[in-house]
Amino acid sequence: MALIAEGVCFSYAAGGASPAPTGAGGGAASRAVGGGVASRSAGGRMPPLHSGGPRGLGPVLSGFSASFARGRITAVTGPNGCGKTTLAKLLTGMLAPSGGRVLVDGAAVRGMTLDEVGRRIGLVMQNPERQMFTTSVREELEFGLRHFGFPEGEVAARRDRFAEAFGIGHLMDRFPFELSGGEKQRVVLAAVLATGPDYLVLDEPTSGLDRGRRRALGTLLRRLADEDGVGVIVISHDAPFLAAYADEVVDMAPAAGGAAGRDDADPGPAAGPDDAVPGAAAETDRPSPLATQESLPLPRRSLRALDPRTKMLMMAVVSGFAVAATGLAFLASLLALSFAALAVGGADLPRALKRCRALFALIAALFVIQAVFAVRFDPDATPLLTVGGTVVLYKEGALLAAMLALRLLVVVASAQILLEGEMRDYLLGFTQMRVPYEIAFMVVVGLHFLPILREEAVSVYQGMQLRGVRFRKTGPLRRFKAFAGLCLPVFVGTLRRADETATAMELRAFRAHKTRTSMRRLTLRREDAVVMVLWCVAVVCLYIVL
Image 1 (cartoon, rainbow, N blue to C red):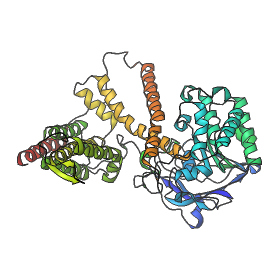
Image 2 (cartoon, rainbow, N blue to C red):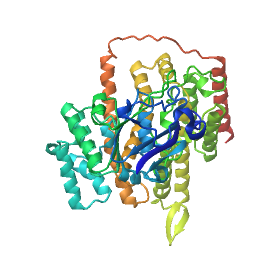
Image 3 (tube, helix red, strand yellow):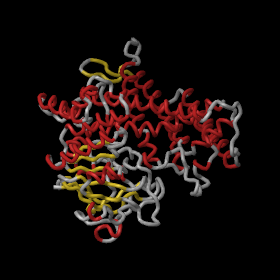
Image 4 (tube, one colour):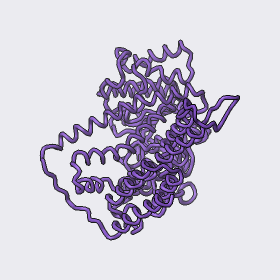
């Protein structure tokens, strides 16, 4: 009975796939299952299991194999960026390996939904706020128990037992997000442990805990392993804590002279059978869409090679004509023109479409609402669809809905052109266009926040599933309640990030000087002028013809 990673590969390369393990059993970068964990008594070291490249490039794990036994506390150590958090998410199904497999007691994790994984494997993330979904500590401790279907009497008993074990009984009626960092960590630990998982993965669980609380946590983990047979995997840099409580150690330090791996930031969307879009696992860990790799030469036809002011003009022209347009054919042609520019400019169209799938769903919902209700009370409207003698759709309503949907799609598609660029260049472009620096800075920061907030929402979404919430294969009302539960942690996280950004700006004397200088200036090239002229001519010609 063990949680096993067998020849696991994972990569954030632009191509999306990790290289396969070399040789039988994964080659030098892997260890045989059952032999991938070194005994602490043997020094707690093992040959490096990580083979990686720079952030966003190359594999994070290549042919990684290890076995985490029930009834044992296994420590996972290594420097920042070696893939420890990525391993935690692979073990719990939040990421899907591009090679190899993860097995829990012989069953493949990849074949399970996240709520099924969460019943057997508990996860405590580094940021406790991503696993807090209710308005009181009492409800937080009961959250997973109720979603996993524990009897009411057992819910109360387990809640009280773990509240006492972590010393949070006096906090039961407090708002979780108001607690201190250490208190939040204890609440999440208690909530996850209360559901009684067979395996427990903890990512830096001692952060925010004082010496006494760390000792209490270690004692509790020891009791869970020895008395309840729980397999405990502790990812930590806390060497004294690991030395005191870990039975075995997996050291993920990279090979000597090897390239450093990516940061252990939360990796973002998973690829799973029901809970996430397959292939999205590596998306949010790649470099930001607004950041380019300066070391890589850009093709002359690449959108990224264009001046940011050129791309802003392209979007402004298309969006402006879309708002003023009154013909479906012209709007459709603008949409096709935008996608043609993305394709010719070297953009990753599948990834761009994937990035906008939530907006597409919203546009579809708006289309239905507009089509059904826009002209329902107009006596001169022409019926288009009748069901059981009742007119449910009018011709004019369908036309207005199609116009609205196409306008929104054109704006979304043209906005993808802006994402093919570097954030700091947009800031330079705004300031050279005489836009007040504060306004330009906030616009660029807003663009930068979009992928960050998406990553936060996905982490909360996955965290809720690991605590038993089902977003799919359930009724519409329960699904709506589940998605409504996302709002609180995402909203609080957004406010928190905004407050931290404002504080950082103040500490760096953001408004201390009236004038600002730049290390470089943007210069419009011949290619930019040609693109701007051709783009404007193409849009105007389409407007005249259609």
